[in-house]
Length: 214
Image 1: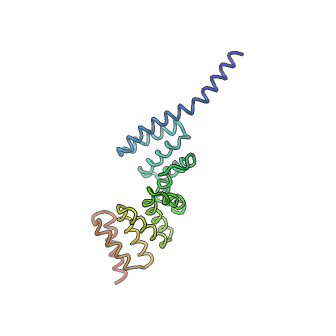
Image 2: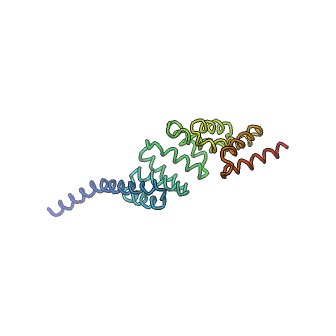
Image 3: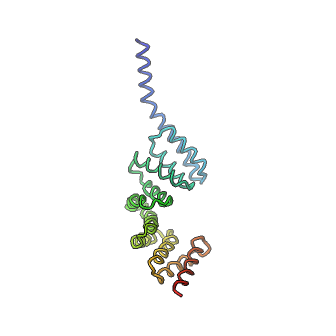
């Protein structure tokens, strides 16, 4: 009888201490992963974040960091899955709606991205980037008027986003047949960064507009 009681107590102790220990282990692992992440060693970071999730699958931060790292490595489907799981466990992760919306846009799931990006746009720290992704998503969905508003908002909120914002504004104007505005936007992009990939695409698009208008 005493042996049975001892086994029960041991099992209860294991049940109570297991998750706490797993969370501590998970935290240690994702803390190490963040060092690798900030050094842009994303493959090494992903391994550590993956171990952190294995240590505690309920740890929202481990899921969040693994999702972000998947995104940096270009696996947007995996990024979206982890970020959705992280938000399901901790809805107030401030950067997660932006990261999730961005991953969905890059994965071609534009309509699915919209509510997350709308949410991210309400936060001062993520407003500008969310507006850019919103504009791109809406442009892909054929919502050019809404796209134009958000792209202009992104450029106004953060000058560092101006190159991308003006390029996609040019695309929106091109699709709507606003040739003069399209030329202006593409000229702005090439004047900002003629040698970049986006600058070269803008120059080609400017030539296409000129051909249509000829």
